[in-house]
Each structure stands twice: as C-alpha cells, then as structure tokens.
Image (cartoon, rainbow, N blue to C red; front, side, top):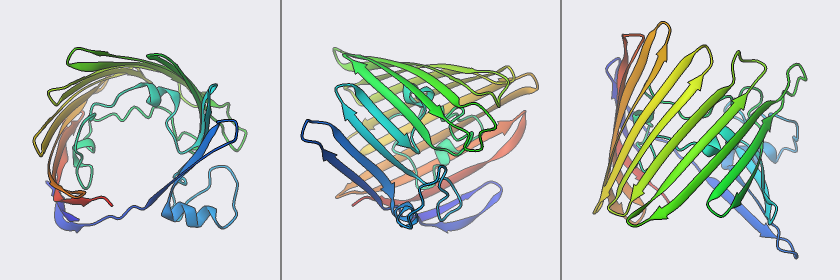
Length: 281
C-alpha cells in the first residue's frame, strides 16, 4: 500500500493484494510434482475449463504452472519462462522492487521475455542441469493451428569463486510470426559484500539491438538498486533508467521507493514513481 504518480500522471493511492498457492508432492519412486496458482486463477480453473490459453477473470492469460521433476530433468507447463528468458538474468537482479514496478516500467527496460506470450501464453519448457551447466528447450503452440510453434533454446552456466558467484546465460528463440530470430547473452555477478551487477545484450527483430545494465547493493536493513537500458534502432534510440530502494522493517514488512524515466526515439516518455510499504505473510 502507498502512493504513486509521475510527471504526466496524478498522484493516487495504490494498493494491491496477491494470494498465491504453491503445491508439491512426491511419487513412491521419487518423482516430484507440483503447481503454482494465483487465487483468482484457482477460482477460474476450478470451474472445470481445460482449454489451452485459459483466460482469467482479469482478461489476461491464466497465471498458473504445473511441473514434474526427476533424474531426467524438469518439465514445466503454463505461464512460465520460455528457454530464452530462463537462460537470461534480468538487470534488476537483486532489486528490492517497488510497489508499482516503477523501476522496471521505463522505456529502456527489457525483461527478456522474448516471444513468450506470442500466442496463448502457455509455455512448455524442459530443463536439465549437469553440475554447473543447465540447458532448456521450450515451445508455445498456436491453438488456432495457423502458425508453427514458438521455439526456444537456452544455456546457463554458473560457478562460485572466492567472495561470490558468476552466472552466464545464452538464449535463442524463433517464431514464424516475426521476421527474425532473437539471441541474447547475460552475465551476472553476486558478491558476498552485498553487491549484484548484471549486464545483458540482445539482438531483436527489425535490426534492433538492446543493452542493459543493473546493480544492486544490500547493506544492513537497506537495499538500493539502479538499472539502465537502451534499444538501438534504425530510427533512433529508446532508453531509460530506473531506481529502487527499500528498508526492511522486519516481520515481512518493508518500505519501498521506486522511480523510472525514459525517452522514446528522443521524445520524453514521462516518469513514474511510488512510495509505500510491502507486506508478505
């Protein structure tokens, strides 16, 4: 709960409540299985609908996933990351967040979702890890049958070193409905001192390149974060930056401040901000 506004928006009260269930089980031979689902989607799916691309009560794609895991790897289906997004680390890694995501809502931010959600938002992903190396493949099918599936491939490699850890990612995704495949790489370092730093680079359709940088620092009860991103296009640059800070009050409550600002092809896209308290139970 809190307040939010921006350069071209009135200051308003802001509140949001999200209830999520996480369900897990295990077979007699050691296979793990489970699901995650939001409360509103639990009500919707409880009505007995099983069609692909189930639309939730808010008009969007239903936000739930199911999975099964064993020695063979993990198979996940639903509103989950495709292999491209699975492999990449977002530049807001380590961010405390804000109550309205102001720090990631600016024009230069790229959440690495790629072509995910191009059809009905229901993704099937298989991932498997061998030591520090992980690989994933994913597909999202067109329920109308008009187009071929959106296919993804991703690789992750991470290792620890004295004083921290490093995570590397490489993702690829292709769709018949887009002119070009996309490819992206990311690197993220997390130090025991509380610093997290991430860099992303992606080649996107229509000869668009994107680069993003982010850093977060946690000390005592405080966490601060900053990120910046730019889309380089033939028409010009679109960029922006975001800031976030939090103070942990203890007991699941924390104060949050967020800000974002950007430009689209050199034109001011406006700024947003928020201030409030987040509570988890």
